[in-house]
Image 1: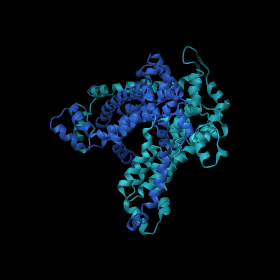
Image 2 (image 1 turned 90 degrees about the vertical axis):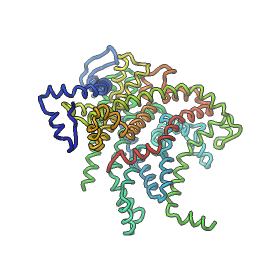
Image 3 (image 1 turned 45 degrees about the vertical axis):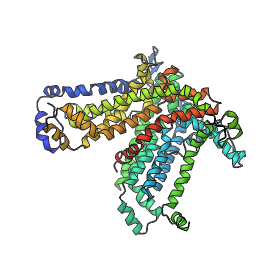
Image 4 (image 1 turned 60 degrees about the horizontal axis):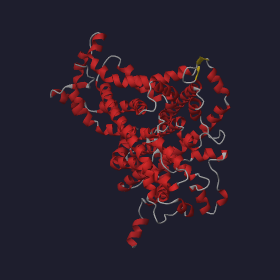
Length: 315
Length: 278
């Protein structure tokens, strides 16, 4: 009935069925197309259409409704001279670099400790303990950290008071100098689940014999770390970094919930600016242009990142 | 006693355990404080920030629950529907892509897979206009349709890889026994793919449960809000009532806690072993 894509066993079978003129083959596959009809329709409607709409409407002044005026590349020109966007972009770069380092080093460190344990039972429990914070809804991470930074009754300030460092208490989110740092440390000791499990998985695939022969050759913990564990998990580390980068570039709920870009523009990021342009100022064309720029930037960074890491593994 | 001491000091795991314990304490400290505070009245909280204090204010929990329960029910319904739809559609699509050869297969598959590179921020504004023009704003349909189509991209790809990895002999055996194609799918392939379906369900659950932005732009009716959005409302309404606020936080963490109590082992092993091959 259908041409099955098959391994060696029934390949002659599938070859026979996949012969014939194109219309006949299409007709024979009609049930397959029917099976794909729902997902393809959904993707065309809710994914591809908005994506192309964003590209197209970035050339227009558009309020999301009737006002729809072609302006060519004007939105992009405006973006180049937009001071808010420039500030947002530089905020984002600093934030992403910090988060990528933090969200790679921290889970790697924890995973390294865990695979060093002899006791399988303990290493299992530690995994669960470090994955546990993910049961807390993401929004609660932000709300809990808003409490930590609270100037009157925040955990951080109370802790400083307790340690006799009351002079250092601060309105962490209210001061433009500290707000971005405060946001960078949101969720701080909690491990990013996905990145942690990816890196842990990488470390677990290093064969036992490699570690054994290294220790016979007299390699201590640090030598093993730098000459075996890090090089051998390079692919997982790269993936974790790319994921962090992509998440952090496009997720702005953190900024929306904690500071809404303020004070001033000290915690503005491009994705939040996009959101505000569209939903506060009804500038859908301008918002689309910001989206396109972000998309191109993320694509370029991912390609570069993959190039660099594959080049590095080729050495 | 001496034996015990030697056991502790001479244990090779000890330095690593020590570091892990410190790390674990720092991780759980904020959570513990949230739970402790949730049992206090405001007076108790301002009087004694750090330690639990009697009497425990269990009333915080009942007043928080009266608000939060609706959001939790909504989220369970929305996420549950999304998960079922994605699991069903992605299994079928993944199976078709993995097991058959047909004209334009590559093109159709590319239409799925290239979307991985299209970020949500790019499509956010035009997608809102689309959903608004379709008249779906302020209905659960706005959330579910977009969550399903967004989740299908990765899920279909995962299901396809999984079905491709199953040995051909299994299918041949079923065909030899005279099974029709749909029977092979329903009675052989889907049961075998259960671990991958669980992974798909889990990732869908987490991403939909935590989505804040999309509900924020499409749902305005308080009674229809999912948990993430509802919590934002709740936190601004109870901004200064710390006990009730934190009781609400604890309550809203319970649903995922239950899921993970059941599926934690599978979730961890699925992601650590299967996700990325070195």
